[in-house]
Length: 240
Image (cartoon, rainbow, N blue to C red; front, side, top):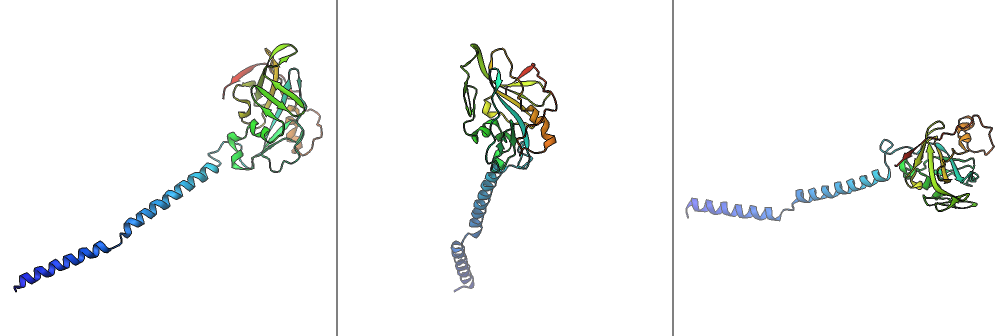
């Protein structure tokens, strides 16, 4: 047999054997790529969920966990303010609460109570018998205030007005009452008022003035007013 013929047979055998070996190999690179894709996908989903439930301080609006705000609240019935809400018995676990002096303390305990979640509705949610809407207000110890009611036989309306500070102009809020976001040192009056009349500033504005002097909401001692609360009649509309 010619040497050339033997050489060709050896080459074919080697080629055949090599191809069989390659067909039997496990495609490690392919499976490694699949594993990496799965791991990266799980990480991205998990991280996105964490970011959604735990927004960073720079991304979330105020107030943040660790901050403490105060606002004055008054509920009005035609021509008089209802008594201040009684103090809540236990406030250690609450992000929004009152100590009976007509002020609401806003102190988020979790990320879920920060920013736009710090609102009038969330406060009412943890106060039995309290509810705010543009058609009905329920208040502990008092009959409901209804948009269909009248004031001394005159047409009336349920309204919510805010003042960003003691000397600021009033803003009539047209959004759902429960969605009103708190602003530090804000004054809020909500209730029933005769058509053509304006809501007055809450009486607890005095407590808000005195707050920096007392540095504490743990006491319900009545403080002498340090200033006369001016009444402004000019109002503007707030739509959002």
